[in-house]
Image (cartoon, rainbow, N blue to C red; front, side, top):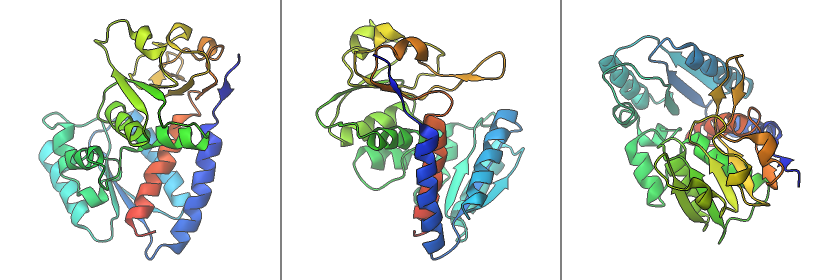
Length: 275
């Protein structure tokens, strides 16, 4: 068996085309404000890419920072949340010393929390109420839907328990009636759990952690990992070449989850603007 490569770039392109129409129909021009609290080059690169994509779609993108201290960061997030001309607020990581993700996320109004950073957003999501999930977790579900993967009654295993991907992805999979197992760094006999999966989501942030021995024949594998290599490239949490000999479908890195994440985040902004 040779796995089908799930083309995240093509799926994202379809999403962006839909967004162009939604932006045109919006009652106001959607606006995303991004607070960049530290002068991190990796964060700066991502924000530049996100800003370019937003502007191409007709979404205003305001970038604030760097650098700011912990107190100023909270104040800026609160100010942007209170600004009626801003529809989505994003706090870029890494954060400065002296502030936790919970504190930073808690300063963002839930209605404008387009990347699910506020703990209240996480609680609403877990309760099945209306909230924006973290964009990467939502991208996992969108990729599965775009590929026509049946989730109801199927076994899904998520490797990783972060509040950004693992936990919210598990919540979203549960909402689709999947039977979900969450594994992590202390899970014993990891392969015994992952080999039960019809859908395997790798979101632990360890390059090449999962190989063919972790994957059931015919499984769909979503690789969320983005681990930098010595030559400046990226690799996922999955050893793609060997897993492709077992799985039915797999997302590549890069070109899988990443482009869809960006499109989903901007979709949340457009929705928050009323379109």
